[in-house]
Amino acid sequence: MTEIGKPNILITGTPGAGKSYLCQRLAEQLKFTWLDCSKIAKEKNFIEEYDEEYDCPILDEDKLMDYLEPLMAKGGNIVEYHGCDFFPERWFHAVFVVTCPNKTLYDRLKERNYNEKKLTSNIQCEIFGTILEEARESYKSDIVHELKGETKADGERSLKTVRNWYSMWKRK
Image (cartoon, rainbow, N blue to C red):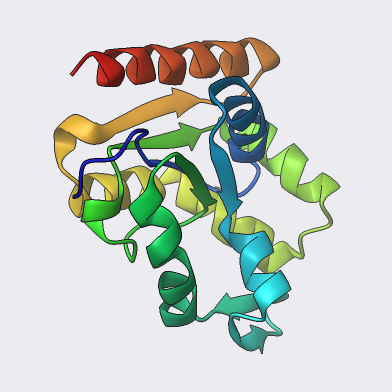
């Protein structure tokens, strides 16, 4: 990883866990660029196909990586996505996985009108800690951190945790 002025941070977790809430506030407070990969994929048409069963687009990871590479080289990015195992390890100084209790997650996804198959799949993903495990397998253990996303108070604690991490990073 090249020497940059600001680190790159990955915020990941199951859909509905609280990633966007956290990313928006961090980007504002830390003056980072928020890169919402789902939004970028839709805007830039980085979609391989559409999965009718799960009612969602399938990301073209190669196109997204090619697009993000020069942005990541500059530093100062908060990358948001519900997966993490395909991002190059060299891109990130910290990986924060937002988790959420199943009941709260279920209610949030139901509110988003997820179909039953997609809803069940995402709840199971959270039950089994799939994203957290994926992060721990894909990145060095000392850069992976778990955050809670159930309540606004959890969100505030998570903001503080990431801001504290950034303060420590700047001292290095």
